[in-house]
Length: 322
Ligand SMILES: [Zn+2]
Image (cartoon, rainbow, N blue to C red):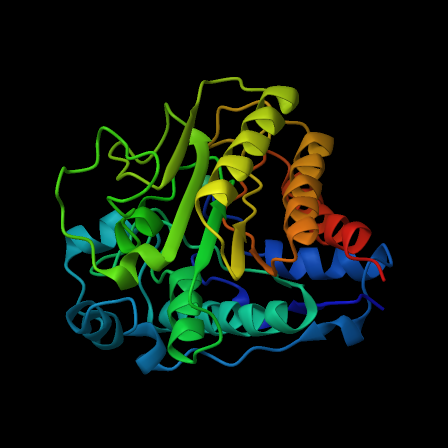
């Protein structure tokens, strides 16, 4: 039995038909965790869907209304890059509920993994890049609303820039290292600077427009394990010098993998596990709880994506073993 919880539901499956996004990966990760004895069924908690009220902590009433009434425009559906259905809406509300539960559990146990979520390309007023609802942002806002935390840090290691995250939580202009691209004098409300965003991503990849995170690490094509771990270590050290979070939201994308169809970095499966270990070790050393979400993963062989995601749980188990 693990010293922390995994959040999972069969209803995480995204009903999107044949798609580069392997919607069956969630079920396969759960199966692999059990088959390989990394976890047993008692380690899993079943989430409830987020409430509309929770979703509205991040998303605009107009966008939520369009989703619930099936009135996205053709252009908005195209931008989402997955086919709209009311079942798909339900799956995203459930993913957000899973991330809320993962955040609550992380605050209790030091770490928790949502075997789903990480939809970091969703904006307050629209979805894009396979992401309808920003489950991580919803979880952060809900924890803040409940008074469980004031400050959170996102550590986004998906191969794609966390554009939705950066737009929802614009960096404070008082940050120690303001980025040249940040609009000078932009008014930032205190609540917005309560979340510090870090994104490590391939520079030459989607999204074309990358709104500034507090720390953006723009990695060149072909970045390998050693280079990636070096940059991640630096980004974590720099972020934690500037900001003291009460919760780290780790977006553990599987797509920095060298065999990924939508990524251009060159990490190995072992390198990705080293990445997970580094994030967990840093968080544990500082006593900061971590909630994990999975985000993308488009390996040519789906089993590689599944292994990379399962390894994230194995890495947490190694670091947080009692
Ligand atoms: Zn991605």
